[in-house]
Structure formats: structure tokens, C-alpha cells
Length: 385
Ligand SMILES: [Zn+2]
Image (cartoon, rainbow, N blue to C red; front, side):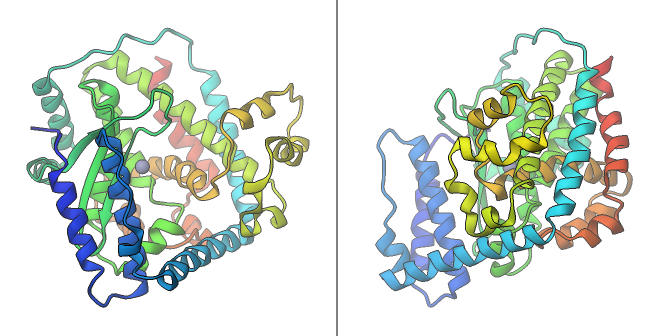
């Protein structure tokens, strides 16, 4: 079975993690476990009819531990935002240039109706996905993932923007992926490709727990590998004429989402430092936010306000993860197709992905808007035909 519909395995992992907290463990390990336990609870709540409450007393032991935990998370955030402020000019210029390239390309795509989504049988779904995994030489890892029953379906609300998530316990190294409202169609397949990207990424995470916490709380780069898998997956379908029209629709949809994230990222990089420090921007009203960014947009007919109202850019880390994720995905894909998974940019990226943004890394690998433009134009060719 591709999908694990039961919750038993998750409850076992939860109980094991709660037991791990009984041992003397470092603060960083406690943070990682608390984060993981919270995610397992969230997953169980999306799968269960009955709601369950996390046992916080057990997780933190006492209020001092809880206080220390929250303070450490704050420190991660403060460091991340300070580092963002230091590089704000770079981010702003890079996002604006890339956004302009994306907008220009998107304008060239002919309009059309979306194709009806085909519902496959489980076998058909499995065969296509396995074919994709074989094409990128990762079928072994995927089969192990399936055999260990690590793929779940969770129920989302109809207008929920989440499509799936992957959880990782950096102490036991267990990874589980959750696909929202799993259906044997191409959208679930794309989400599975994305979540498998996280599972693949984390299966190669051999660094210490503190580095994992950095990767989770401070790095802009942990959506890059999953986004690369999305690109590879759609390319596989189109090149092999499998559900081609639907694959093109998905490419279009994901490009629009990418464009929205980049616009949000650009807006955040326009805010004055004082509003970024200590996440002050999070307490702005929509009107105040718009007032701060509007002067940078020409000929705005309420479009900016409408955009901010629809998708308030109120989580800087998440927005930059997806924006840089989608940009870097193109560079990583090129590297993987040329040099495989251990050499070239991809190999170097694996070593450095938990770090905060580094301009030097971008310069070393020529990750700039001129190269982005070339890769993006090539990537979008399948939509222009
Ligand atoms: Zn993701």
C-alpha cells in the first residue's frame, strides 16, 4: 500500500519521542524534539476525528524549560532577522530582478482552459511515480519509504493553502510525509514529489541537532530541494508524454504561486529595518503594511492592497524559503542533471544548506538574475508551445 491510513505507527513514534525527553538531553535536542512532537500532534489531529492536545507538561518538564525553549526560538528568529537586515539590499534587488523576469515570461504564456484532472487507479499512480523515481535514480530510497509506511494522507479544509508537509526527528532520523487530501491524481503526485524531496533532503542530513535547528529556524534554503523535485517531476511527465496537458497546467499553477511568493518577499524587503527587527511587521495592520510598501509601486490601482489582503506576507522566513527555494531549484536541477547528486552546485549546496544566506555562496556559483533569466526562460519553454 502506498498510503498508510493508520495512526498506530505515529503514536509509537510520539511515545518514543516523549520517552527520549526523560533522558538527560541538551537544550537543542529538547527544542528539536518539542518541534517534532508538535508536528506529530498536528499530523494526528489532521488524521483523527477526535482532537488531541499535546502534553506540554511532559514535553517541557517544568515552566523553566518551556521558558528556555521559547527564548531560544526567539534568539533564532532575532539572529535570522538581523542577518536578513544586513543583506536586505541584496535580497531586494535580487527579488525585484527575478520577479521582473518571471512577470515578463508569464505574460508570454498563452491563455487557455485547465484540463480536467484524471483520477488514476492506485496501480497507475504508483507506476507513474515509480517511473519518475527511476528516471532520477532514487527508486531504492522511495521503495524503502513506501515499505516503511511513511506516506500518509491528511484532511485539509477546502480553502487551506497547505498541500502537505514532512516531519523529521533529528535524533531517531525518522521521516514521514503527509499529503493533503490524497487523491490518485496529478496534484497529489506533485505534492508527493515535493514531500519526497524533503524526505530525500533529510535522509542526507548527517549534521548535529543544533545544525538541524538552524536549518529549520534560520535557513532560507530548505524548500530548494523539494522545489527541484517538482521541476524534475513535471519535466519527466512532459518529456514522456504522460498526462501532458495536466502537467502543463500544474507547471502554470506552481509558477503563479512562485510569482506570488516573490512579490511577498520583495515587499518584505522594502520595509524599514525598524519594522523587521523583532518581527514588528507581524503586528502591522493590512493598511499599515500597504502604506509602507505602496510608494515603491507605480500605477497601483488597489492591486497591491488586494494582494496583501489575500495573502498577508506575515511570515518572513516562510516567504523567503519558498521564494529562494523556487529560484535555487532551477540551479540545483541543472547541476543534478549535469553532475549528479554529489558533485557540482548540488553537492556543495548539501554541505551549506543549513547556513544562513551567504552572498559569497551565490557569487561562487553564479546564482544571479542573469543566470536565473536564462534558466527560467528555458524552464518555461514547455508552456509556450
Ligand atoms: Zn516544502
